[in-house]
Figure 1 (cartoon, rainbow, N blue to C red):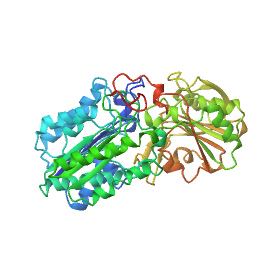
Figure 2 (figure 1 turned 180 degrees about the vertical axis):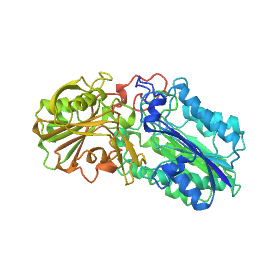
Figure 3 (figure 1 turned 90 degrees about the horizontal axis):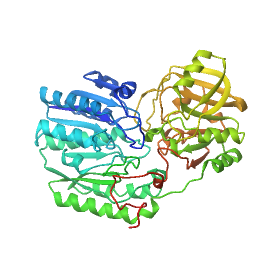
Length: 488
């Protein structure tokens, strides 16, 4: 028995004009063949779940491709073509009994609004209708009919921050076992309620999602239902499939899958008014942070959420912190030019820089700062704990720490880097618990790392490519009407 395993993951923000090219994947991870097994074995990613499950069951593996890049704009067509060619050619060349495939579910290519569905279509076209394919998707996938039609079963994470990625990979492997070894005939159904779930309420450990996600265990007690998923959707993709989705995988009972998916989607719809949020704006947020009694205070920069495909160099909160005279704060910015200037100045060198605001003006203008170069670091660190994203080795590129007046710190990364790990700071010698204010460019995912550090959390309605209010965006391709943009 041999299973092919592969992964090709990208969360694509269609409002970001910067195309995600092959170099963006190479900067994070793009490898083929056996090295995939050694790199991902024992990790926390769904690919690690595939590997560990296969090794536990004594199933041989055919590792084909693993590729992932930091969320950004749409993927270059040539990158999708290359990934699809590698996967399809290797599947044709080497016999296998089925495929375990890790996708995001919100990948968009320049010419393919549903890039994940297009990849699955090409695989199905290559291997035929009887070849078993089981897929994992991110909780933020915009799941389409094309995706579901071109795989035998699909499962998504159930937590945000994503702490169950390894478990999701194991769920997928168990489904493939049932299809291949037990010869079960499985059916799956998809239902998509017409709403947008605000990123600000997407913490699955908090209401309203805590109660919603708890709706799945009763399905686990029904022998006719093999798996169920509730994807929250990714609102920064202007594509027809944008929005939440319910997936139910049933054992030889297609009608059961359809009815259960529709019923849960209706339950979600009835809760739609609890799926919106209003946050404070930057001036009020900084003022609250400066007077907070419980520190560190984490300011959540929703509009420049790196994990959602934003610029990563937004300056709205930095400018406001400086304007109000805040002290002992730390802000991270992606700014390769500023990093190079710090590297030229060297450790202890004094610099005056225009930082941030270089990608666009949606996230604020460049800000002038002066300070001492405190640290230069290669930007690579390892995260040993289970964290959102499931990555063990992380790459920020050459990184500089600039010491500003008032014991404040500015971390300058060469690559955009989401705050999924405290290692982003601790590898630079920064102790987060000793800072007064920490700015994270995120939405929910940072909580897995910062929950034990933050004493006060203030979520901020900042502008940008990942702004929390969907009304800030001009959608042209999504389904309409959709709540809360339209009266329904």
